[in-house]
Image 1 (cartoon, rainbow, N blue to C red):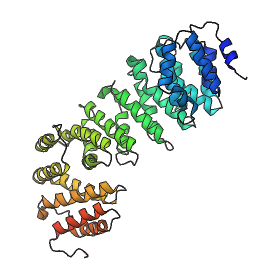
Image 2: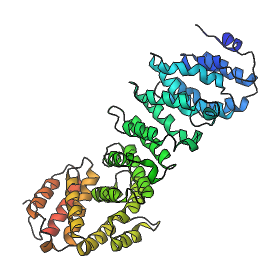
Image 3: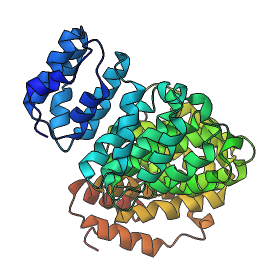
Image 4: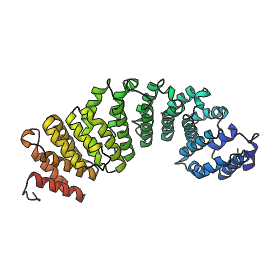
Length: 411
């Protein structure tokens, strides 16, 4: 079917309301710029000048025309049409069959359409919620990663469209979203799932999460050292949300997870990405109480309660001093976890880890550190002295000099 400016306008018997056939055609067919002009013309005649201006201002057409951003353009278009009251039950009904289309572009567009609709009460009010949830569940395992991403986004948007239904569907939601957290092919799907989980968790209490709590916590921790900045940031945000949620049922389990990951959080306070380090600071602050050391918690709070710029080395010194007095086991954990970062793919983290290792040795009694293999540490630092990055070389040289004063640098 070849659509022209004239034939598109002929589809509109009532210019005051956009009929479902036109919108379906616009979204699901590969329409030229001419069709966009026809669409704008129709909107103008229907008295929707403000909507046209909003579509242009937010670059909706540009997003729609670009295959890489098409799904975002659909979400934006649907959002603006919803505000203008131009989405009808007929439009929704006409789109539902397209989610099973053999054509990927049709599945992408229709799933993005439904994902955005999930943020509006209309789906619940018009009795579409249950079938759309089922559709999104199926599309969350689509072979196309953009379709999977849009499906996951739609499930998270239930929080906006029908927040009172989140608890009812909590198990259904968590199973799908946790599965999406381990998507093997797309970091975009993983990131979208993290955002969706964050939305859902804010509507739940600890008792609502059930056994998903364990799987979710473990999955989130796997992204703390991910090379994708966005995934690291989101993983710290989610871990912080879990820390706030944890009260009684999962307190022991979460405390053990914190003991296994607190050093990672400490090191990422100096994450190469400033935005990630800010989120990590908030999460670290929330997690320290789970270590169960009141004096340490008080000391850490003195550094993190303030809005002033954090001085990580001063914080590390205080932590080492308190652990040397209060908890030798946690001090050993701090040291052994720190030296694993000597092999980090980030030069900044290698330098941070080497410096922290030096701080640990400087502020604790080596005679009491039975677990310390000094020769192994010196060998590892010698490797860092030959690091490609000059900053890492300098830190390693300084730490060796502090450990063994007078040692020849070439030894």
